[in-house]
Image 1 (cartoon, rainbow over the protein chains, first blue to last red):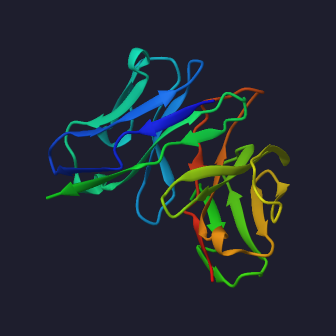
Image 2 (cartoon, each protein chain N blue to C red):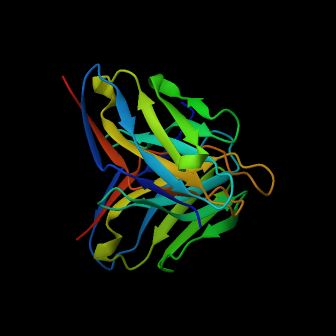
Length: 114
Length: 117
């Protein structure tokens, strides 16, 4: 079965510094991977997705993620954090049953300080 | 606005009551979902419908009954509410074509916070 592990439950950065949110996945086949963001009292919004094309995926709001099969990782990065980036971030893998069932990680709360 | 909209946004009720949450999407998607987010922010799928047909039914108590009158609507009815049902429930939709589509992104509603007292 597919699963994802987000290695940090909380990450705190200063505005203007780089962001790194770590995610490892487990899958018996080549997975589809996603990052979603959830702002307070809001639904989830897709940041980016990996679907076996380019290993470096660019998303919205300056975020990007790199798929590394050898490390089974899909870490999310951003060169310079903005206050509006403060939110909960979820790493997600799509299950293999063909019905687009998403398996969510436990989430990483990103805090951005002035 | 094109979106997934769910009502109500907040729902406070007592144990034993029956309640419904409505969801509508105007994105033209053929697949809709219900997810439950617990107090620790953990998200888990409950149900999925494709063109009004149930395709995913996780191990959810049968007090929970989804209903899809058409492919733009997926409502969630909950009977005999329990304290443990308190959570945020998210509706979502996606366009899933064919029998195996692993990478269709989901569009989420803003959630319904259910509190059972």
